[in-house]
Length: 393
Image (cartoon, rainbow, N blue to C red; front, side, top):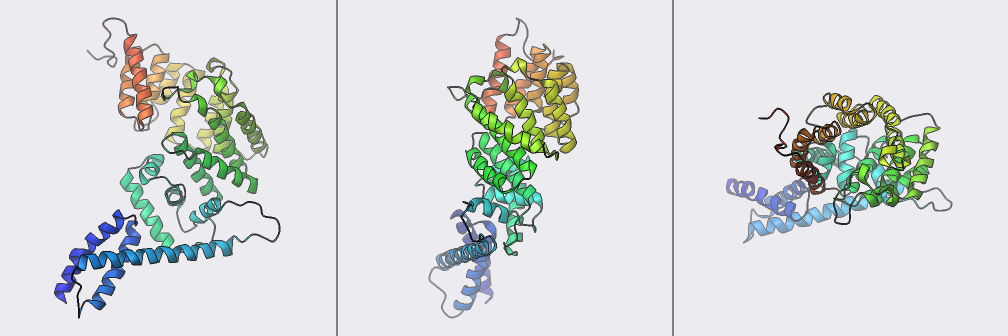
């Protein structure tokens, strides 16, 4: 028996590795391996197989598939029982949206529910979820695994919280909008369905925000695939139909007098959309909305974006002072400083900061854009200016 247990201890991790490579997640793979080892313990005492490793792999994989089929059937029954529509006409409810609500289970913390639904329902990779949350991939992988283990002990019959679902849709749209994963259209479609089912103003605010950002999407990329900043976009390419729809939805949401962060973000997007040129942008109003947003959601990212508005409304030096209050670890910190230094006329400092920001960029498109900005300033620098940071010998 001791030899058998030693063999199990040796083969167990190898079998789990095979299951994970075949597509099983770590937690369910562990369960399947344990069941296979238990069966082997019962069967091998009298007649062990010629190839114990192959036997364990085959048995564990079969048990994993059996478990998946059983879970799928159970959850279909639970979803059907809990969400069976009332008698009458069919409203066209979307199964993905229903599953999204169920995945945001009350047993999970909001952050875990967001992470899990982005991974399991939204289709994002663990790395993409980690990027959205600004945490290391390993940290996010542990969070998702813990969420899965928590849900494995719960019956998925109680729907999740609306606020968590709204946050999930927001993050799915943001990930799709970067171009790395095309989930923006799906996020808009689901948010439209959610808005049709509730009068919650933040749902309307989120839908308006998505539509106003999506209206600018055709102008975000040049013919050669380069990223185009907002102030340089060809505004004739903006979708005026989407803009009008987004503004109308936002007005209805604001009329309910229950301001939330997505309504504030949509109001900022609407002011950008209202400007026929970059120079016509009403930065004073935008700054006022950022002040509201800081009251509603005082995060370093919001504070950094507010600093840009300060730089336009009150001057680049005031903007740089505002940036100085934001931790340098916040993404795009160096890029914002570069932009404001250039507006202040300090092209050498701007060049160095654009180059720094390019090295820290989270995507190839952003890196290339920032590199071009640095090269543009370097090419136009006066003779004798090296483009190093101010004060560098």
